[in-house]
Length: 459
Image (cartoon, rainbow, N blue to C red; front, top):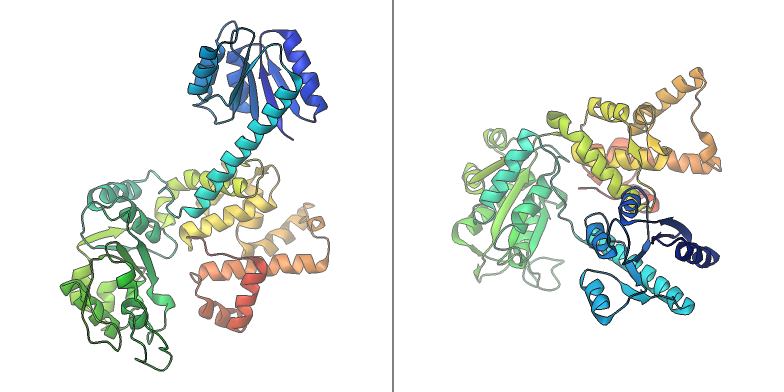
């Protein structure tokens, strides 16, 4: 229900406004001074404020200004001493509109409706911008994360090549995005290539493009990732999985800033900054003959190692709280509190999937827990592989799993299947082929399940 806050030191005005607005099915809160009004804004979810200008203790204009540090809720200012100058000043300070006393009922209701619509649009715009933007904040205050942030600030404005190392799901891609965002190339494209997801016979065409007729399926000319990233940044993720022939061509491109499309003869100039990432130990790969040493030295001008989540468990509370707030917002539900005991339980878990795994677990906890996320919720829901054991234990203790949340047996099976597949995909860094082999189903069938359950990879 939409909640409107009235701040006015005259009780008759508050009472009459309350009667009008409650008749229109709005929930109404009212206070008689600005200081109390600001406290309400801090504690309650308010959609609109009607605020008098001339009040004791705190002037309405001061309330309007102070509120902007707390919330972006729209304000409608009201006053019995209205002048053009007052209205202009209210607008300058960010008020949605200004109404004179005595209030005209029709104008009041129209202004309230329009202000609420504007507030809804502002919220929706923020949500959409957040969804569109892939560059989220690097969360954490541990020594490893602080060093990464400092390195990004120093390195980003240069054109130095960067090699980012770290386990799957630790946040290597986010580091690459920030290097691009803070660089002089930020207005140009950031082109991402997952070298592990592209078959070795197609990687060269993907990177350098191809000419029409250069091979059987080359029915038209294709522009490669190097050309697409021209004047921008090329992010080569999982570089350790690139074939040796492709490595040789990448090395030449880095040395000469020139490429040649597959099947082509013409050399093309490219101006690209290359950032690479891997979860492998490239020095061991070099010893095994799987990676070129000269390419390694070309890529590793700057080395950034992203620590695993197990190495920085002190960062889990701030990361988990941020994910909880974000996910609750996405699902349009009140923000759930993670109890201190639950937070300790999260810190004690082994995070083989790192940040990606943590986000999926928080989403699972948000959906399945009650108003608060407790340590029991963590034990029951955080790791699907432990859920059955925990459910049996709880049943013995008289705390049976809440099967009432499922209307049918099929609903329960779908829920269990979704959680199992999501867990396996995360465990295998969303390598669909590997996951399909591991769980014993065809890859096409697994793709169908991913689409059916709306599963998405979380970076």
